[in-house]
Length: 156
Ligand code: UDP
Ligand code: MG
Image 1 (cartoon, helix red, strand yellow):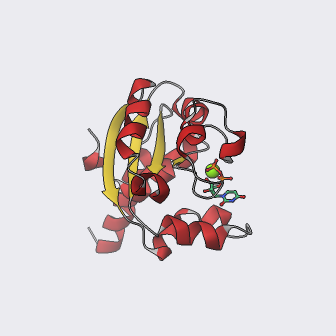
Image 2 (cartoon, protein in one colour):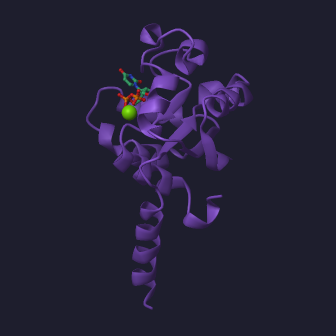
C-alpha cells in the first residue's frame, strides 16, 4: 500500500470509530490548573458515562486553531485558542445513550453565569472563556473531535 493511501485509510478508520452513543470532552486548562480534574471525572462517571479513552496532554497553538477551526471567524477565536493551549487538558471519549445531548445537559450553558445550578460549568467554570469543560455539539462533531486525539487502538 502506498504511504499516502495508508494515511487516508488510517484517518477514515479513526473517524468511523464513534457511534451515536458517544461524545467527546476536554477538561480545560482552568480546571486542570485549579486541581478540579478528579472532581469533574467523578461527576461524569456518576452521571452514567463510560470512559472509552482518556489522555492528559497539552495543545500547541496550531492544534487549538485546528480543533476550533469552526470558530475561526468568531471574535473570541484568538483568546480561545491561546487559552486552550496555555496549559494541560484532559481529552476523553465518553459513551452513554444520548451521549451528546446528555453531556451538554451535565456541563450546562457556555456562560457559567447562565449555567443551571449543579452543572459542571456552574460549579467549576471561571468565565465564559475559561469554562472548565468542552462537550461536542453533534454526533458528527463528536466523531471528528474524538479522532483528533485518539486512534481506534486507544479505545477500550
Ligand atoms: N467562548 C468564548 N467567548 C464566547 C463564546 C465562547 O471564549 O463568547 C469559548 C468558550 O470556551 C466556549 C468555546 O469558545 O466553550 C466554544 O464556543 P461554543 O459556542 O461552541 O460553546 P460550547 O459549545 O463550548 O458551549
Ligand atoms: Mg461548541
